Length: 418
Image (cartoon, rainbow, N blue to C red):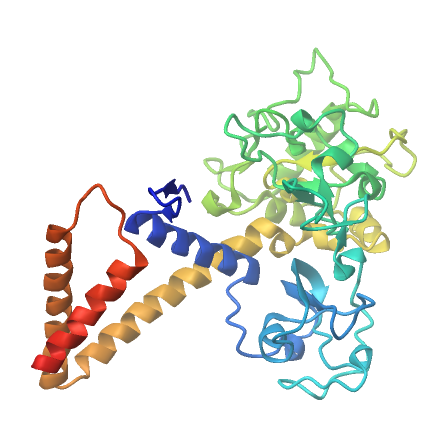
């Protein structure tokens, strides 16, 4: 929010700027919390696909436990609590054995330990390979950090093993052109991604990998024509992937006038996902190679993945077994992505606002005639007082807190006289 300074050096903002800032803060909170109102502990929901998680250093200074939004508000109010944004496959720890004698106020009957929960140094307030806190007290200006979609740790741009932060795919305004980031360490676990066409990787200009169901239409736009065979990073010919994708798409009973686009925002893609088509395929691996035996570049490097990249991942029996062995089956789940999490959060927010407006209208309609007239007269009095104030002040001067207090004092005095 932009702010000017008045003659006394105090920051001044317009009413519109103030209201916009409040709305932005509420939206940001809803996106982090996923629409969770914090009314009840999420323990009974089991290991949730994704939820906002906090770490209480007052109760667990070892950083080996996480709590849900409701427990953060109800059980740990006034404690030193860290906001960890979101974590996947996590169950609320509040009040279990890690908290010793401390008991959860909302859901006291919990298992001794949540064995499937995963913890890292974020729960101690440390991030990145540099193992520093955020905000970093030693830095005057905080650096932007990027979260790995696999280990879920956060990294400073200068510590993600790139030659320069300028290599991060962004548009001219600095907004990210990628949906997910995979750090250097985690990229070694999913080296098979280098066997896919380069359209799954985001570049300076957002790639769009379109898949058409027509037999004679191009499948992946960045794949060269057959007379100019292209090579992937590991020298595996991308034509193999192209041909298998064509075979899979032709095998499915899908209308020829449908077109699936990989690279569009999931919020704007109402068509069935490409993953649905692949999942219903004849079971042939779209990679067309034995990735275990293939010569894959052994040097791991960070990866920036284009939007909807998960939809392109092969779902044949062999690949499904590989994902399971590597404990990365969540990559196939669209709901695991932050983009989908925030999309659902926005939808819940819209529903909440509509419900709130409806409740306010119902409240007013259920009032008696006298109560309605008192409210309407109060609104009219405020408008008159505020209009009178604006007509008496110098328009070049900023409205101060004292001015606002005087407006309400005048309204009180007016009501006393009545």
